[in-house]
Each structure stands twice: as structure tokens, then as C-alpha cells.
Amino acid sequence: MFLAAVRRPEVVCANRVQPREPFFQQLWGPSMMMNRRQFAWAAAAGPAVFARVLDVLAAPARYDLIVKGGRVLDPSLRLDAIRDVAIADGRIATVGADIAEDASETIDARGKVVVPGLIDVHCHAARVKDGPTLCLADGVTGFVDAGSQGADRIHETIAVARSAPQPCRVLINIGRAGILPDGDTMDISRADVGAARDAIAKNRDVIAGVKARLSRDVAGANDYEVLRRAQDVASSFNLPVMIHMGQTVSPLPRLMDLLKPGDIVTHMFAPPPNSIVDETGRILPEVLAARRRGVWFDLGNGRTGHLRWDIVERVMQAGFWPDTFSTDWTPEGRTAQVIDFPNVMSKFLDFGMSLDQVVARATVNASRVFEVFRDRGTLNVGAPADVAVLELRQGLFEFVDNYGNRRTGRQRLFPSGTILGGKRVPARA
Ligand SMILES: [Zn+2]
Image: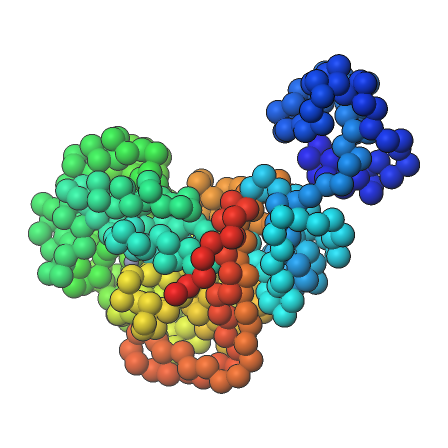
């Protein structure tokens, strides 16, 4: 509050006199520069001093960065209007119409959509060194690498996560060898509870949950036991489990039974066997019950076996909308199906969702799933200044599901700029 007030002299100090040189010099010597720490000290020193400090600060204020004239769309604030977003010290300083003060840097966002930085709760960006920066250029200012590695090589994803420019966390694959072409846990001994526990204990700051991939070609008939062991590991640390559903050997209701509040079901639009919806368009009662008790349902776009348009249509028509969108991004996905997070979001504009509803699932909703993102997914004053500038183009755009089926949409979002912690990052190459 103090900072916002100080940086708006037209409001706070409009009728006040010029700075009082002698008083100020007594405090800090001849220099008129006052940093934030000094300001906090002065504020704490008492109302009298604080009032005088406000006088001094009547000098022209500057923001570090202003994103000007965009359509600012922030579901967390119920805001959808042409606004400027002003940033100072890495945080959102104010959002308003025609902010008059100058800034060190200005981004012209006229004709663009300005949203909180995107949060991808299921991707594999920590699998490769440049994954985090590639995603950042697409507007992704926070992500979770969901199960790229298990206990044996988790240090590799953790190293990438730790050096990533944006906040990120990893989920440890319950299969100790990570993602394997012949199935992570086809051999049940790979679902090693002790090894996973040790890995989490050593990296509690970065590991934010456990991933259990349960499809027939990943876990075979072990799916139920794999999930049971994943919960066993997660419960020792009070962490969520993310299941990769679809085409399981076990019926979905049996697996749903093992999910606790805060767990995540990804690939929610996976086609049968063991979809969340039956042939008549009814969402399984066990799935509804899971949502009621606080289990999240996530998109997980991916490229194989997770997304088929007829299932999306049926589930959306039943009103069972995703809580979060995620890309299941891999480097290969950059050129096929996934492309980038804004592209993944665009697909749902064609299924009855408004732009606002689409943005919510990639921002504020996602911020609630993992603790690390709690103060993000919003342009609220004081929040870290993570911003995605997008372009909403009208035209004919082709979207492909994981089965080669095509749909033509009339709108598509494109990444146009990213700001992370108040700093502009390079655009996608
Ligand atoms: Zn995945």
C-alpha cells in the first residue's frame, strides 16, 4: 500500500509543498535519493516523519515498466478492460486507465491481450536444459515438470528446475527409472517406495508431489498397486499425487477411490477404455465425487492417447469443465499438437468457453494447485510482476487432437511477450 501511494504523487501529494531540504539532509545527508529500505525505516519511525517523507517524494515518480493500452484480462480480479499495468521493483504497482507517469521502459500492448503469467501444472520442461526458457518465451512464468524422472535420475530434472528463470517444481515419477518406452512400472519392483522417499527427503524444496502414470502400456495390470505406492510415498510428506489416467487395466472408479483432496487427475479427456464419461454422456459418479472432495481435473494436452475431440465434446457438454489446462509439453510438442500454451488454451474457445474462462484455467486456477504459485496467477497490486502478452487472432485455425482428427477454430491465441518478475524476456525464436 505504501509503495503504491508513494508512486502516485498526483493522489497523495497533489496539494503539498515542495520538499524540505534541511529536514531531509538531517535524515540522510545531502543525497535526495531514498531507497525502499530507507523509506520503510521512515515509515516505521512514526506518522510525523512519514508525512514529511511523503512531501519529499512529491518529485516525479517513475515505474520500471508500463504495459500500455492492452486488453487486461485477469479473472482473479474480474477485470476485462483496456488498462495499463505498471510495474515497480518486480511487482505489480498499479493497474489503471491511462497511467500518466513515465517509466524506464514501456511496452505497447494496444490490440493485445494482457494476462497474468501462465502456469503450466503438467509439462516436461525440466527434461531438457533449455526447456524452461523455451516455455518462458511462450508466456509460461511457472511450471511443474510432471514425472519426467524417478528416484534414479531425479537430480537431472532438479538441476534444470533450480537453474530455471521462472519458479518451477517437479513431481517425482513413482517408477524409479522415470519414463520408459516399455512402461515405467510394468515391472512393479520399479515402484520403489523407499527410493522415492529418500529422493524427496533430499529435495523437499523442489519436489512438489508424486506422479503415477497408470495406462495399460505404462503400468499394465499393476496400475492400482502403483497408485497405492505413490500415495504411500506422498502421504509421508503431505504431498499431492498426480495420476495420468486413460486406457487403464483397472476400472477408473477403483482408481478414483485412492485419490485424496488436492490430488490431480491429468489427461481428463482421454478416450476409452476408462474414460471419465460413458457412451451416453454421463460423467462417472466416482469422478463427480472426486471433484466434490477436492480432486483437481486437468487437461494434459500431450501428443499420444490423451485427447480426442469427441470426448472433449461429450465432457464439456456434460458441464464437467477442466479445473486447469496444461500442455504436457515436450521439446517435440513444440512443432506438433501442443505448439505452445496459448495454442492449447485456444482449443477450448471452440468448446463454449469464454476467453475469460480459458485464461482462468491457465492462471488463477493453476495457482491454487501447488503452493509455490499461491501469490501468482494474478495482476493484483503487490503480486510478482509475471505477465503474458498474447495476441488473439481471428481467422481459420486448425487444431489436431492426439488421434489426427482436425477441428477448425475461428480464434487462436499467440504468445507475444513475457514479463517475469518485472523484466521483459526475449520472444520466441
Ligand atoms: Zn506428461
